[in-house]
Amino acid sequence: MKFSLVSLGCPKNLTNSEEFSARLIGKGHELLLSPEGADVLIINTCAFISSAVEEAYQAISDALELKKQGIVNRVAVTGCLVERYKGRILKDFPQLDLVFSIGEQEKIEETLLRSGLFLSALPKTLYLPEYKMSLTAPHTAYLKVADGCNNRCAYCTIPSLRGPYRSKPMEDVLREADLMACHGVKEISLIAQDTTSYGQDLYGKACLTELLEKLLQNRRIKRLRIMYGYPHRVTKELAELMASTTRIFHYIDIPLQHIADAVLKNMNRHCDAAQIRRTLDMLKKHVKDISLRTNFIVGFPAETEVDFKELLAFVNEYEFDNMGVFEYFREEGTAAFAMAEQIAPEIKRERRLRLEETQSRVIDRINKRLLGTTVEAISDGETFGRTYKDAPDIDGQVAFTRPVPAGRIFKAKVVKAEGYKRTLEPLV
Image 1: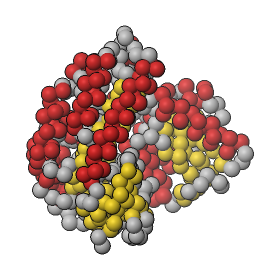
Image 2 (image 1 turned 180 degrees about the vertical axis):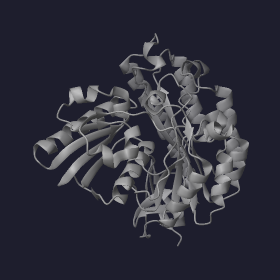
Image 3 (image 1 turned 30 degrees about the horizontal axis):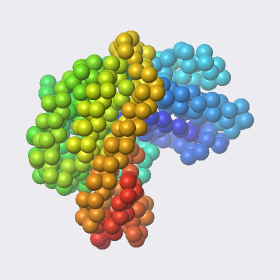
Image 4 (image 1 turned 90 degrees about the vertical axis):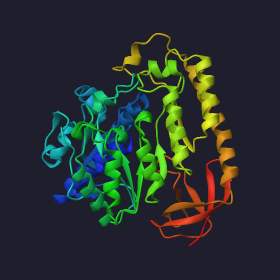
């Protein structure tokens, strides 16, 4: 069987695509890089927010047009859209051949032979692939250490789509990381809805630091990157471990969402402004060159101008290296959907633009300090790549003044910096 794949959404969804693609390839099936001639085109969807649902619906429409033209034979849909809407998808798109849930991905070969709607429960344990298909550059990969979430933030659909928090056993994570390293991966990004809760369900305590210590014992692993930490679960022990080694990039992604206590409470975030500040101050104290990435939501129900100005001042003070800003999306099935005092769209847009402008001025200040400094970088291609401050796919890229082989980790001097466009002179 020849199959083609469209994988939408976040890195966590991408790992699902990699895993079921590997299962198919392991059974002798062929992955086509373009849909022409595919026996089946699989769309692995995201449905986290309304814009993701719209993107998924557009991808399905495009795929069905390819089927109508005879370019592909069958179209199958899986992923979070199926978890969210189930049978509605076939009603909206009766021309689809197959709709199957995330749980059905574990028996992908058998499922693709069927037609119709197939739903099964989310897996209670996470799959350890004997071989993992990489849908990223060969030198960088995502390792999902857990799935699901127990945090129940008021704006978030993830618990209903991905279920409760489920950690991958530590020995399986170690084996998967070794597998990646043996296949030439230089940069392994640890991901989950909340990496800092890793192990809580299996071992009765959060074990991210212990996991990292065990990963570092494998000398084949060159670099690790930590994604999606929860503020009050980022510990001093984790910071001290990061500071003690260059093999963990001095980078952490901590989605903070807001800083005003009233908004954090309405969001059902399990930390307050004081805790967030203590966490960030602790990281900056112990990891002197720490690079911080975060996300913020503006226009959450009942967010006042005073709340928003507190967020502006906070962003100006803490100087995040990378930051995502999102207008609040009112999503059915979340606690925030029914909240009173929904914010008008024009106010949400205006606040997003003001926060982005504040961040732009922050980046200007960071750039002045970066010029002339030496940083660690990784080449994604001969003439471009990233610094340790930049995660794959979500953060910016840098240009090199001369070619460097793809996949190399090296020291470089920052010779130009304007906004997120930076140029490095390789010192190799």
